[in-house]
View (tube, rainbow, N blue to C red):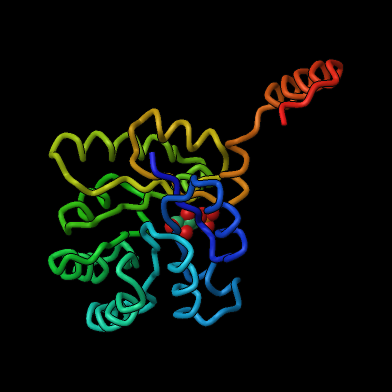
Length: 217
Ligand code: E4P
């Protein structure tokens, strides 16, 4: 499974990229606004740190303007992935860009039918938002299961990019279902490393080692 970080915080991206666990980055207009940076500069900065796909979202609602925005964003770096909303105009834009060899991430997916449309439009990634579905008492992971089944049935190449992840168990459940990518906040990626028994076991090993008075170096 690939891990993307869902943030526009450059310091966080650099810090986590150094662990070797970051395969890409997703941003959205809210995260970009929070960064306080100029959007094009922000995406360029992220692209300089991470070599995998970096999602940059268009903000227009109509196809023609989405295409114009995408053409600006594409020029930043070859690994910029154009993020479009799951709307008729977004999918039309997805089809045009995909036909042209540009990576596209279709965002704000909340149903299997929407995911099917995105695959037919040639999306590189579909982003189903599991946390936001869970938040309203729906079954986020059930959606991932349905999409994985549907895509397998037809051999669609579109990768399932599990988004709106809230905790490590979302990542584990998505991995068990065979989803291709999890995009998660930096804190969730850090949580994946942790287990209290690891800390406890390491402390016991090092306490015993200290008693020997030895040093490897
Ligand atoms: C994905 O690309 C989105 O940016 C993100 O996962 C949304 O997460 P949220 O529901 O926590 O805002």
